[in-house]
Length: 143
Image 1 (tube, one colour):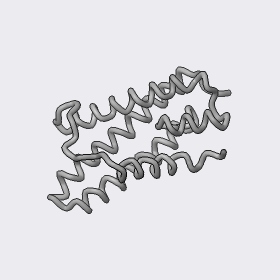
Image 2: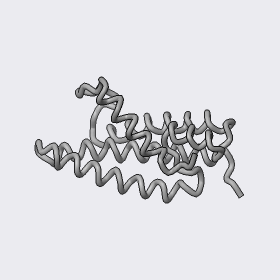
Image 3: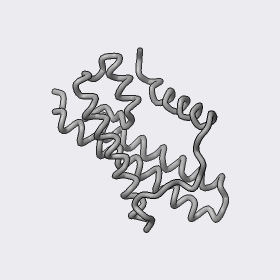
């Protein structure tokens, strides 16, 4: 039996929150512990993020599919894996969960809840990397 929409939405919210808390939190901790070694900080962030993602998918996959990303949800809807009626609720849960996860990570490390990035992230290279990352997330979804 398929879980109710409300249960699936709570799972997407919680999974997105935990993922963003892990990504941002491991980034903050990696920077603090690496003592200026950017490669070491990136490695720590990558390993922590990968481990968190696996745990989150295993925990929430059976409930909601653990999409954790609007692009993945849209791709699943496109191939009929989720009904279009559920898509807005999934996306709202993912976005609000992501914001909550960032806030949680910042609170855990004594940073202001929300702030503007100090790193410039724009331009063609950034857009291309986002395309590649989104493609990678969508890759397991059969079309």
